[in-house]
Image: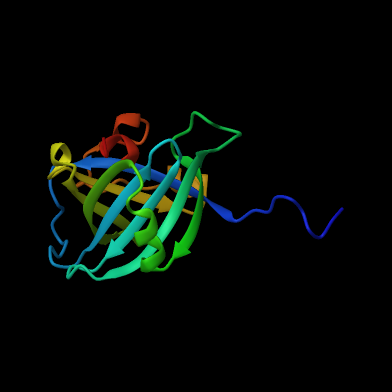
Length: 169
């Protein structure tokens, strides 16, 4: 055994479910959002994300990668998520890379003690106005036990056409 292994874990499980909503739910403050600008780098599983305040100021920049669970590769609820936090200047170096781009406003709504992320797509143009919600949990059991609020529409977790990568097309 070595204390300097070739590979180390620096990722976390992302356990989530996604829903298409008919509209922004009641109770969401339309002025309280962050803007997510994503670049899905061509030929990779990398996503560069810049999180902005409503005034356009970059709050955080991060390079992420999602991979299927090797033990359940067909389960879209479970992904290995790796994140590298960057300065806005570092992100600017990468922003010109080729790939799919998207932009959405993200709101938060607490329901039954859980925080839902509510996204309203701004770009690409074909997705403008699409409203989606996602919920993340710490375990598979918690995820399965989520009580879906009445404002949530159709669950699309298992529809690959509603992944952020596919929607950025």
